[in-house]
Length: 216
Image (tube, rainbow, N blue to C red; front, side):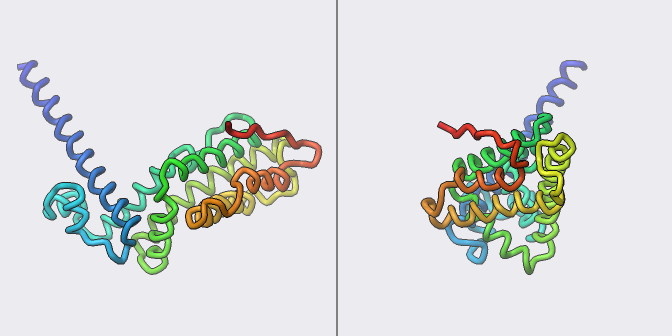
């Protein structure tokens, strides 16, 4: 009996893993198609075909168009990474912010279509309540995490004492979005690290500057 229960449990786990993989394949297919054709040209039948399944399978995992759109937003947020949206609390706010900027830069380097897809989804969110709500949740989490680092740095004397933590956090996150939008269109528009150094000069007290170690 125990062996039977174990086999059933193993089968259930495998089915769950298979379902998660199929759902991920569908989202990857949607991501690639948005990068190629934009959201206006996105068709559910094309997503299913790209993922190698029939249209009913797509509807099984994403019952409505709104559900699919929200899932795509969340999938793209995962590509941006937990490390960016929830910067680690290392005890050194300056190092944490610098690591956050570097990690975000690497995310866009590792996912060349990320800026394009983010722009498409952001435009859609202006007129689509479901996408808008999903983006608001992602942005809120991200801004609060960076705001926490700023407050921590101000308390420790590592960052300027006259900063507005909420506004400073939004400058950092907006810089990343804007920088990647420009670099997505023109990879040679500017040196990301050179421009992000300006944030150091703005955030860190005049007597607290420390040289940034550039990536090799």
